[in-house]
Amino acid sequence: MSTGEHFDVCVVGSANLDLVATVDRLPGPGETVSGSSFAEYPGGKGLNQAVAAARAGASVAFVGAVGADAAATTLLQVMADDGIDATNVAMAAVATGRALIGVSVAGENSIIVVAGANGTVTGHGLPPAAVLLVQLEVPLPAVQAALAAARAAGAITVLNPAPAQPLDEALLRLCDVVVPNEHEVQLLGGAAHLLALGANAVVVTLGSKGAELHTAGGVAHVAPFAVTPVDTTAAGDSFCGALCARLAAGDELPVALRFAAAAGALCTTRAGAVPSIPHRAEIQALLSGA
Image 1 (cartoon, rainbow, N blue to C red):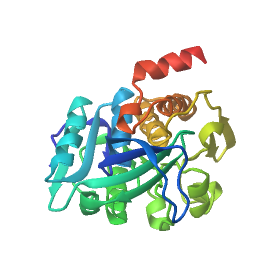
Image 2 (image 1 turned 45 degrees about the vertical axis):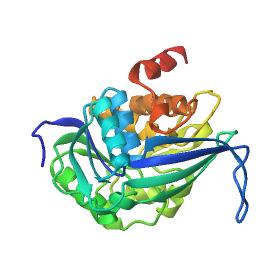
Image 3 (image 1 turned 30 degrees about the vertical axis):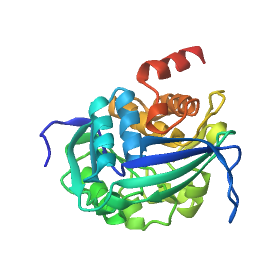
């Protein structure tokens, strides 16, 4: 059920407890390596992006599911701490989602996600919001239902198609802005194909190389920010959440993307998923100094 409040951003997605091991280098297939440290962090692409939008200044509602366990208590506290409305977070009869993450000293990562309660998310009963943000760590029918409901309500619909997988064109036609990385955009048929299906814009994130904005008017480059990466786990999520916060605030897309790029860059300079996500003042400081 909705609280009746109108939000800047509604995020439908996953909430996980991340189990993170730091290693000198990531193991290859069949290889065991020794870790130097271990930590548990709140995460999940949905929760990460909700936190990123909230810390960027948006009022945020999260729609997802957790289990009846200690991990759920941790994740719900994160939502409370960042002022995220959790009215639409369901309590499932299975364990809260987990992510097993290896992070190298060079800042690269390898991730295994166990969906758990995230697999029960339906995408129905969304609270009203200016922008809907979805990813692909919950069932595709839930993603499509959320996009359809938000489109019918007049919201801007934003899809981060991760983890990478082929998607039905009916789902893609419901997206105003699609934010894939270089690999994901190829799986979806390329930026031109997504624009032909009805997307107003395709934003291809390029990691340390910045991003590309594809529209009917052509391609524009979004310049990166020079930082020293520590952990890239939630960089894309910070980018997406910050982007949606600024779209909800009325920014034009190029302006919103510059803000998002700064958020993503700052996120890489700290360890963990949720702990690394920057606040609005930090992002604005980086933009002012660029």
